Image 1 (cartoon, rainbow, N blue to C red):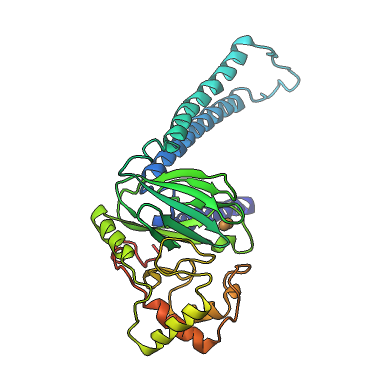
Image 2 (cartoon, helix red, strand yellow):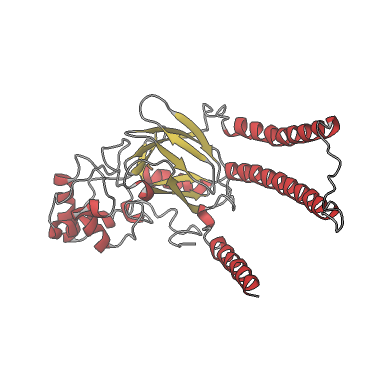
Length: 354
Ligand code: CUA
């Protein structure tokens, strides 16, 4: 009786865990809910693999159950040794050929998908868009060379188009991973550039993570990709190209913050322009969904971040206490009003955790 209860409990626990864990998949961060071409291709491959595994499992289990029942030791035959079959050629051939066929069934679409996902042949086309992605400890930079736009942490792309990425790193190896739109690609330091492309089907804010252990804050190296319709993207492009970094903010506090920022922060950061700095480019900072990729964009969080960034992202390169709390508060006022474009603010999954 106790034994059965124990088994039941284990089963119930597994059942509950399955239920709870299945809720962990966030819509815009799930390879199982593809919203882009690459992700869809990869899910198809996963499904083929799982189907083959289930097929093999069922057949093996059926044979196992059959043998278990059919060849049980019967009463009165305890000392009978059954007929031994060794080196049965037919059986050897069957269980060698079947796995080869299964591997071929897996290999053909896998190789096809590998070439398909590496196809950059249209990257040089007049209309094609390329974004240069740079991984840094622990933030992402996105450079649009043709459009002369630079932005960090949140990449904007048009839906329904292939956007080509040239990926590299400024320090150690990182990995650009955008599960719901495409796969994953390493960013390497030095000359070894990697490439991939994104093709988003629908508007949304998609979450990305660094997928290569790169230091103490590796797990905090998040980014966002905002996919908007081609029309909205054109608008965003125009908005970003017209950013005036010198524009005077409305409030006195933000004006003072601007001066403090220019004096203390500009050697690493930039606003507007088309180049990457030592630190993230803060254009459109006020529109970001997250602060430093991970925190809610409240003023309190920003002030705490400016004063002591290492508390939130250990090992990051931004020095602490460049300014005091009072000055940080003014700088925060300045940064949070940097809303150069509201394109993308109304996409379906903006500012939700689902
Ligand atoms: Cu960058 Cu992990």
